[in-house]
Every structure is written in C-alpha cells, then in structure tokens.
Image (cartoon, rainbow over all chains, first blue to last red; front, side, top):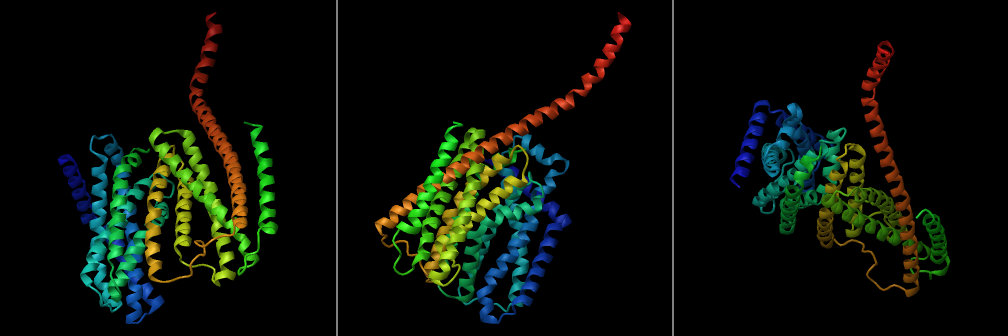
Length: 225
Length: 245
C-alpha cells in the first residue's frame, strides 16, 4: 500500500513538474476553451435567462473538448525513450501509474476550470439562482468522470493508428451519461429549478463504476503491446 | 457442417418469406395506426436480435479476457458487426413509423436514446478494431466492450430520470397486444434470428479464413527474411565443392 502511494506520488510530481516547466498542455487548453467561449457567444448571443439554460451545456462541452488536448498528451511523453516499456517491466503496480496519470490530468483540468469559470461568468453574465456551492461537487465529480476514462482510453488508443483522433471517438460515447449529468446539474443549479441531487448521485455512481473498471482493467491495457 | 449451411440458408429464406406473408397479409390491421403499424414486425425483431448479438459480444469479450480464446474473439467481432447492422435497422425503421404516428421523426425518449447510445458505443468498438492493427487489438476491444456494457445502464437511468421530469410521447408498448399479432411477431423474430445466425456464421468463417491467410503470410514473410542468408552461403559451398573434389 505504501509503495502504491509513493510510486503514485513520485509519478504525479514528475508529471506536474514537467507540465509546470513547459506549460504546453495548460496553455493549449486555456486558449482552446477561450476560443470555444467566444465562438459560442457569437453563435447564440443569449439574454440572461437563456444563458442560464444553455450555459451548463456550453461550459461542459468546452471543457470536454479542452480536456481531450491534455488527455492526448498523457502517454505520448512516455513513449519517447521507451519509458512506457520500462514501466511495463518494472515491478511497480500498474494501478499506481494509472492513478498518477489520472490525478495529474484531474489537477490540470481542474486548474483550467478554475481559470475559465470566472471568464464564463463574465461573458454570459451568469448568476446562480439555486445553491451555487453545489457547483463544486458537480465540477469535481464531473472532471474526475471525464479524466478517469479519458486517461484510460488515451492508454488504449496508444496502440492505434492516428491515435489523436481515436481518443475522442472512444471517449465521447462512453461519457454521454456523465456529460448529461454535469450539464443537467449545472443547468438546474443556475436556473434554480428543483434539486440537482439525482444528477450528483448519478455522477458519483459513474465515477465509482468506471474508476473500479479502469483500475481492474488497466494492467491488461498496459501490457498490450 | 458444410452441408448444414445451405440447408439452413434455405430454411431461413423460407421462414423470411413466410414471416413477410404473415406480417403483410395475415396479421390484423391495427385500428388507429393502420398499415404503418406493420413496420413493428421488422422493428421489434431487429431490436431483439441486435440486443441478443450485443449480449453475445459481451460474453465473448469476457471469455476472451479470461481464457484468451481466439474463437471467442472472432465471435466478438462477428456479433458486434452484425449487431450494429440490426441496430441500424431499428434506428431507421423507428423514425419511419414515428413520423406518421407521433408526428415527429425522433424524440429523446428512454428507449430511443439508449438504443442510439448503444449503437454509438458499438460503432466506436468497430472503429477501434479497424484502426488498431496490432496483435493486441482483441484485448483492447474486449476491454471496450466491457466499458460499453457498464455504460448502458447509466445511460438508461439518466434518460429515464430526465424524461420522466419532462413528459414526452410514450411508446405504446406496455399495453395489451392481439394474440395473432404476437404470433406474427414471434415468427418474424424467429426468421430474423435465423437470418442473423446465418450471416454471423458466414462472417465467422470469413473472419477465420482471413486470420489463417494472415498467419500464413506472416510465416511466409518470416521465412522470406530468413532464407536469403543460407541462399548466399549455398552457392559458395557449391562453388567450393567442385574445387575441393
């Protein structure tokens, strides 16, 4: 257990340090989601009430697309100099590697959401009519839902031709219930009609189910060569 | 086995003709919908067959992951492909029926949406199989099949909750059905299942032959790489022999 934690932490800090020095993924994601915000606001031009109804969809679609940018880079780094092969033959548990990668992506996407959230609020003049604090569990659970499967499918698409395009093709169909929960929960909280509890519970179920599945099956995917 | 295939093909053809006759002429006309309702005899059996095939795919994938059985993997490919075809039939016949009966082509109802998402998942499964050509494709595809199976109940619950909140046109499936209609439905389902089985069988043989050819080619190219080295040495030894003798 302690080796799992220490290996996870070591890989995680290495990834964060690398990302902090280059800031490649973060800059690309920030600029990409900024572009999505601007293009959406040109295409809809909503008033305050309408924007409450559609903002949930816009925000999460923007983050989903932006997250793919980071997810695609997750494993590409490890392919250089056969780092992934070294992982494969090392006695380190594969789940530690997976957890580290998923947590790294989680931190990266959460950072993006933290930076882009205020911008969304400004551009769309948003003000939550429901309990705004509930947006925090929705964001955390939703981000984990995207990132855990995204990290897993990024590892799967490593073995395919044109893997950059493969990741969204695999990830999006599986993510449909998660995206719907995030969008609906956000819409309910912003528009203040009813309780978002069902969607938060569904997100939690999704997270538990797929985190378990990813941890159980990651070794199979990692060893596939 | 070789003789069984044409026999089954003839039986299937006869069943399909009989089922068509039953569906178009024998089955009673639905009182409110009229003849449009007869698409039901194609829509529902296709759906059942598609779901059956996706179940076969899941079971075969799990078997492959546990025992690494190549036959299970071939079965998984075949059932996914044929399942997507039948699911497409469902998604096409549904709107053709819905337009005159509901007045709309499509609604985001529980069953429609779940079927659509299932179709999307299995298309992504086939895309993965197409884009990945390493020997590890079966493993990855089997993993994806399991993820898809885990996803479907979640999709169902999310849409179910979403749509019970917002009333929508409901499929009149829960009501009672004329026993004669049910009889025709079962005959059609039998015919469609036989047809699906036939297609799967033929596709399975094709898949198996394809793999054998690939294996033979791999072995051949392996020998092709190895052979030049001795070929170089043979003339030399031949050349040296006469000189020595």
